[in-house]
Length: 433
Image 1: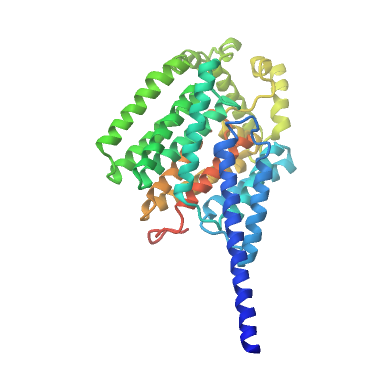
Image 2: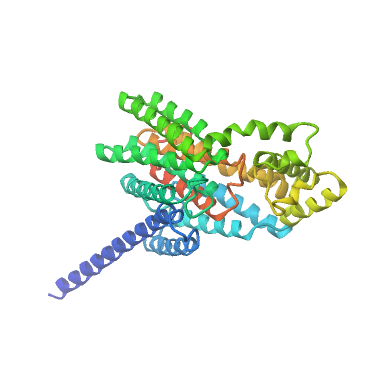
């Protein structure tokens, strides 16, 4: 009788532990989806921005760490290709801040994102749930477009944030929606995600952000290769592609005035690149960017290894204008402007070391994406992460896409999701995880 009672107590204890562990696992999974939902469904559609993002990330990180402790697992699972370059880049940001100075908001966001990626790497995400978040975000986007363009002016559509930020977000969500539509099996899921991709593409066009729209060129090439390589091209997808082109080119491009902004590029670029360029040539959007690029390269030549830091980057503007090296247009309209190019910004402020870390942040996840593509079973996830990296590599040409917290969150969280969906697949021999 005593033995039976002991066995009963032991079984009850084991059942209690399993139940507690199961509940903790569900709580950890829910917390990760909460972070993803904040980025995809809240941050750009409501006037809260990234105000509560770090708090939500910290909450999810703590819950995931408690879950890790309960299962006695502290390893990075399947996401070293993202976490290691993120950690390296964050370390360079901190080192540069200590040697010179820098942007604390950038350091803070990369630090919390790195901790989140580590803690949440234990969680397995499901494509169907991510697809639901994309479809809901597309519905929010459609309602926002109808509201803004129906009752307000549609010029430089940007939701509740900067049009550039909003354009980057829209392109990344279009990437997710497109490939998830190819991955999911149910017909209604696929078509809802195809329509979601159309909405996000239209939103990107409505922002009239030329640097963001440039990313569509390599992204369309990657998608065309995916359709050809995996033999998923069909008459329906051909019709859908034509519909997307017609919608973006015919409606969004014309109504938003995006065409006019592209037509002005040559008129603004030629004077800024000429040998006789004066202050007037740099007063356009393109011209000012060219001026900032020239300035950033000049700063990098002064401090090639560790960079000049934020304060000296700004101070040189005044000094060199007084010396006649650069025209007053450098500070007339945006005296505290950044380089409008992440690569030039990096080498100017953090030198070759910073530029190398930035390149690693893009190249290492891209290599991992190619490995997932070569594997069997989740090629679409590899194409998502590769497309996201290529998109940000393109954004970096005309913007500082790794400086502002919102942009950092888009990159790190969405690449985390893509690599998470594509992990645990059979990687070809000779490739490392």
